[in-house]
Image (cartoon, rainbow, N blue to C red; front, side):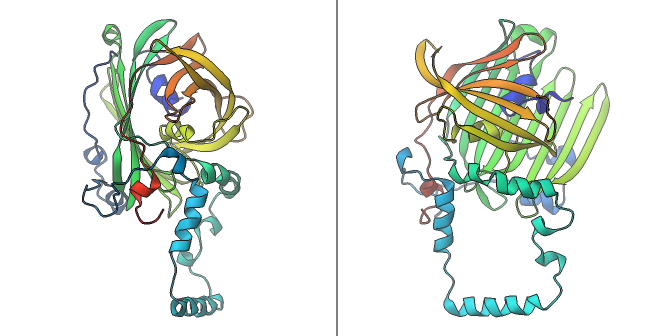
Length: 382
């Protein structure tokens, strides 16, 4: 089983390197669309190209608001709906058109995806069950924020992972948060197995739902390119995979339905930072990776004082586990520690494996710019 499936986000980042991970000098990797890797020329790919948001774009606000002014996505959605007022004449006309359609046989285009015969029944249930999580999440987004975590196994440093929050971009006609992770094996381990991987996730800024995910693995034993696109209009994920190993190329192309609410294996880490982390609170939500779905269950166990970078810091200890739907046995569990301040910094993690445990600890942190609010991204709406 691919290690990427065992844990989400860092879960995947660290476990790719459970036998390796490098010093703190990361090579800059230019974001790639993976066009050449998959020879993508169809409309599905064109739709998901990434574009910078211009500083002169009228949609980009210069006003920065304090975190306390941030409202839950549930309230934001209601506010947006109220703004979209249609003139009375058009409303009347629309009602007449609807009545006419009732007497006619519905075409496939008229039927919502959720009501089609082939849309999974369990996803319909998920759409109702997990909506509350997204209604109350408060995204934590500090542009240019950086984390560097040291990963160790059996007490030995095996490498480092760098996590970055990059400026907002445009993807698929949406403003999107941009998160990037870099993974490097330790220098001494390069003689055994060298790892240099990059992962990026683009998340709809309005809904905090994944839009695009890319993974580039450059390792001693293999080269991997992984592209996943998430289309909220068709409720489908499109997946392309290419691996070069021992001179042989393996390619996969798939597409499957998705529930309305989910995270990818990397964006989930940032999603958790925006949840209401109070002792005793429990959360559950789907994670989709390579068209497969996992259920992530989490519980805020307690607040602990831990020593990070020479300072004692109060942190929420969170226990998380992933399972295949319908499978009773655990598929993997891990503990995370997030700071209790407004930054919700990722401080530490510990994952038990068959032999020993993989541990990670924050060793470098760049605070980044002032927190971006919905008003900054969508001026005039909030």
